[in-house]
Length: 347
Image 1 (cartoon, rainbow, N blue to C red):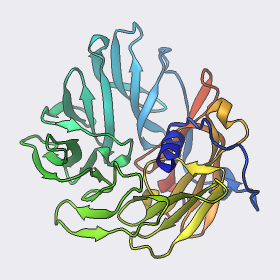
Image 2: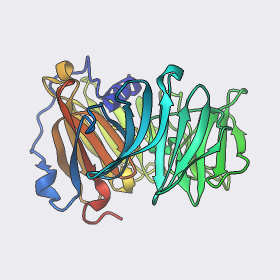
Image 3: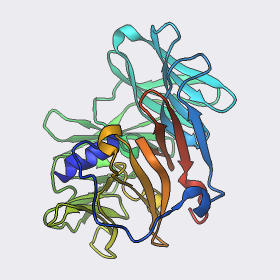
């Protein structure tokens, strides 16, 4: 039940959830008041050529990488979009049912996995675009920042293995053979080199594993709750006796446990405690079942303060320190972004 609700909240589809819960004691301050210097931006839903644009990855609040069809509808393009220009990185024929997955970046370098009938890993910088490898395997995506990570010139991801386990894969962005090892069970990357298990377990994670050293850290789990973890924090989601949700944060060993939100609330993104400093969540309102939108909030762990990002947010995503969301109807909306890295005090 908890896993399903979390998945629905992450996708903006909040159907069938309670419309009202316990009263809150205070109204959180909006971002513009709490953090006036934080970098924010608004992106029109269409490009200058009139095509619909879907961002996937944000380098900062004003620079994004996303997809859009060609004006004639025969190609799917991968683009870098800034306030001043649009650069086409790749263009794939629509006839092959193409997709661009797990776009990520490090500095000025971008990397992504694309599907044009077969999977391949690509990279781009300011002047070049090149294919790195076709040895991607049965790529697994969990809609998290860990789906594809670039660290020190190496790309890391996980793939399904024929044995039913998880193949942990790495390759240099400059090219060369893909290295890999198979682990029993289902794992995903949660901040390289750390992996977390529990992908298919309704109770969530039970252990963190270092993919380089093999070190394992047990996770303290709670009965009747779902636990998801990063190397530093775990998010515990449970349902109380009255049917309302509770979101808590703790360290993997169970210490420093605290309640982030209660009532008609839910998780907003897959990533746990972005930047090791925040937790994103939504409060479900009376119109959420009709619109699929909810109030988007961010909890600052160090100060125990909650700030309102948007009163009515949909299509919430998080990558690379940037949270983005839509505001408006399904047919008329604007994409907004907030760079959490620019909030004072962030590392």
